[in-house]
Length: 353
Ligand code: COI
Image (tube, rainbow, N blue to C red; front, top):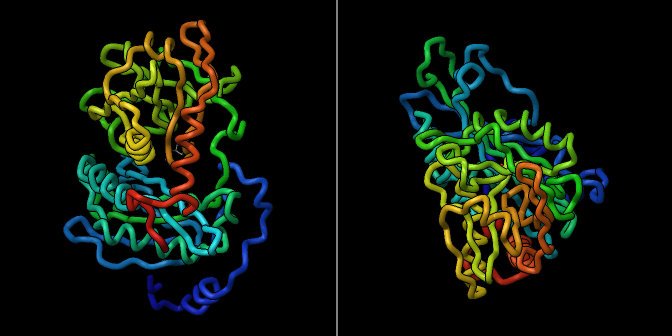
């Protein structure tokens, strides 16, 4: 990957050729933001296509107070990770999938989106420029956050006249502060994440703040996260606030079918494929709350969460405990083995930077 020739090239080259690590405690990474050196930015007007972007030092961005993102939430984001291999190379996981999902979300919100190649190239450039922040093997990953926002000014409700695509990174460890310990989830029965015909199936920025109130209340009661039911029947499982959900019952794996109300996770899709290669039947179908409570094993998947076993679920005051999962451990080991370059990548999912 060639970095753009800008006045910052000499600084960038020193990171490319230097083999140093950033001076942080790699044993203490959680999922808080650690600001890294560079971010990538590319802009285009509504009537154009994205053409060229560039890296700049990580820092605040300027936004018009009447930008569509600030006023009407016209924006989508993505999340993916880069890992440092034992041999010093860097791997990113299925970045084309994130690029496609961003395009689908952009289309739903009437936004211009970068091409798949532009997206992947921007991710690679940002990872390389921040390579001293990629944790040592086994200590975590570099989380990559691409954003696409309506940055142009509007007053009436209409698509923004300008769009900005941004990529920044942060080294991360485990998503939940409990580390890899089993999650204790509570079913949320007052608020809903998504509605049929709504935007639950795309990664719009506006899907996330509305879950905070229920999530904060659940955390205050000692739960790790909340589980949402579908808003149409209030009977079927959808997903957790930050990840997708799977159950195992009688050796069959099931996960809610996406149908536009559930985020089609890249980790979700990869886990379905990995489980099938182990010979498991994996069904994507509606899962009732009763089935969830009667499952043999439950686990969550997501880019940030990876594969996390569920230890208990509480619904209407009733708490069910699950055995902590051999299956989720096996799937976690296979997925992260591929992501970190420890296992052969037979699916061709990883991309070397
Ligand atoms: C991810 O898993 O990458 C996400 O975007 C979820 C977010 C709540 C951290």
